[in-house]
Amino acid sequence: MDHPREGQAERSETGRTTTAVGRAGESLAARHLGREGWHVLSRNWRDGPRELDLVVRRRETLAFVEVKSRGPEALAHPHAAIGWRKRREVERAAAAWLVENAASCRGVTTFRFDSVAILRKPGGEVGVDHLEDAWRRGE
Image (cartoon, rainbow, N blue to C red; front, side, top):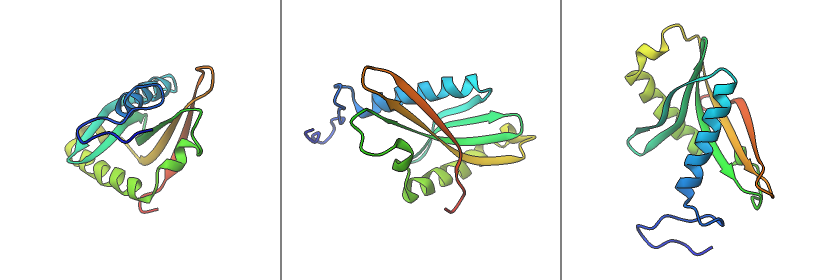
């Protein structure tokens, strides 16, 4: 794949921008979590350069969810793409979200970081893998 020029979005093998692929994956993740009883409180919430893909709540649990989408050509599982640097960014954004949205946290006893992997398989089938408590703060 050629690298984009400055100001151009990178494109996947399907011709969609990586941003469009990511947003589509986040929509699939939000629907999947909704079917599992989670309520989406925020989506694509930004704190400067940092972003939280999804913030969800189910009863007394609040989860900050990082979503990664990969196609059939991917060499590694999408969960593996969340390295220590990305985890720190998510943790910092989560702290800012908590300050700004304290009212949404009433009754919450558990805060955690989850990951949702969107796996596009050959033939168009899509799998969703929700990894609860994917990492702990500082790991």
